[in-house]
Image 1 (cartoon, one colour):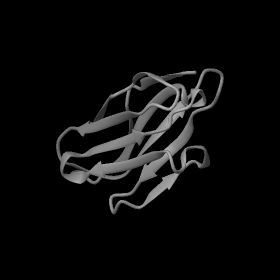
Image 2 (tube, helix red, strand yellow; image 1 turned 45 degrees about the horizontal axis):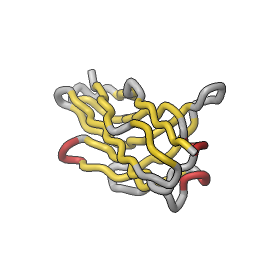
Image 3 (cartoon, rainbow, N blue to C red; image 1 turned 90 degrees about the vertical axis):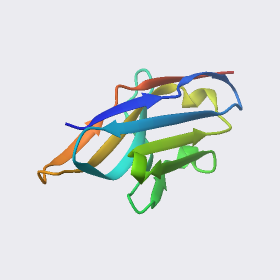
Image 4 (cartoon, one colour; image 1 turned 90 degrees about the horizontal axis):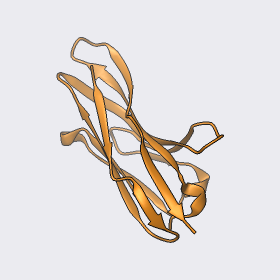
Length: 120
């Protein structure tokens, strides 16, 4: 079983920056697509950014130019650098990883979520 552990959330002022990290752990697996989602109160979970193993990226229009997703394949870790934060970025941020285990079983794992709060 592949587990994801997130870190880096917190409270920041309007215009500030935060960096989220998410490390995948387990034995005998390879991650393909990794990504960050967020869910604000009363809203559905939405994709923020995703990155393939080859480091091809995709961003939600609302974060383009402000957020940067990156990954370290050797560490099975994905990062989200968030700059120029706005109050509307306030949400619980979830890490997602998809891949294959050594037994050739596909997995689709989620982290526990980390709160990001941007004050105005």
